[in-house]
Image (cartoon, rainbow, N blue to C red):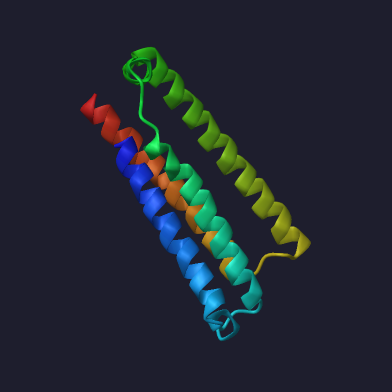
Length: 137
């Protein structure tokens, strides 16, 4: 499962990076109906590079010791617990940043509802996954 996600991250990263570079190379970014077309190139390049870095772990060949650690129940529990804490911290910080940006006047309606939608999808996914795992385990 982890390898499939890394392959998807790598593939999407390459597509987004090349799309951004082609947009710049062909000069199409000037024709895009956005307030700051120059930021499209920087944004797609940055997102593409981040996704590529997240997915490039797929090229490392796991040693026998790494495979044993990956299948160790204690390590799996530690990883799952740390990911749960990271999710909660990220969601909390995202809500606090959104709250402060709304009241400072930096967020438009579209951006606000997009971020609220992302938070809602994350929470719904968490609830559905917890319900599914309670029934399965």
